[in-house]
Image 1: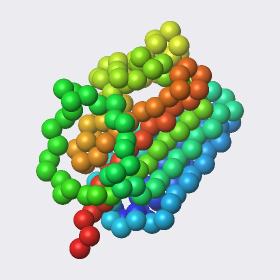
Image 2: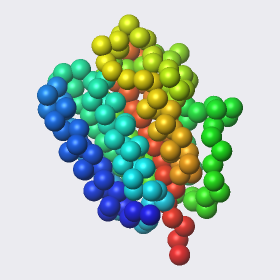
Image 3: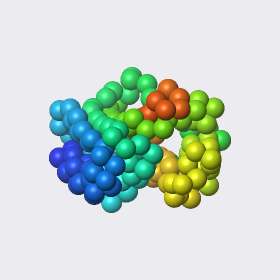
Image 4: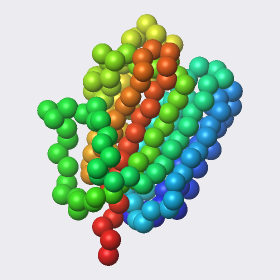
Length: 181
């Protein structure tokens, strides 16, 4: 299990990995991190895979001159996260110790946005939204579906929000903190 410091380094290293593509599109990147919480429950390799997919998508779907902001903070279970998953599509999760607190990582962009009617379909396998709008952007429609499965296998949640086309989007993942010892 990585500590918050190693998770923060993971986020910074992923920002560096997508920096070349972001620079080519003249995208600004910002990282906002709250206080350092205790141990995060996540496999470091899968955490990197999850965050790399979200950041790569943000770069891919944000037009030249846009902005990507990554925010990481500690939240309580009482702060609601509107999940895009539907009960019938949720993956079975291994038993994970219940945690009243989470680390929440959000990737916000000023990209093309998502129609409200398309939000429920985002995490389905092989679904690419509005093909005419993104036909020039490569992809299979598996990235977000895989990301959702990985997040849920960690006992976490994922959600997406957008104010509509041309208004950007925010993808948020939550991972439980390790119970206090």
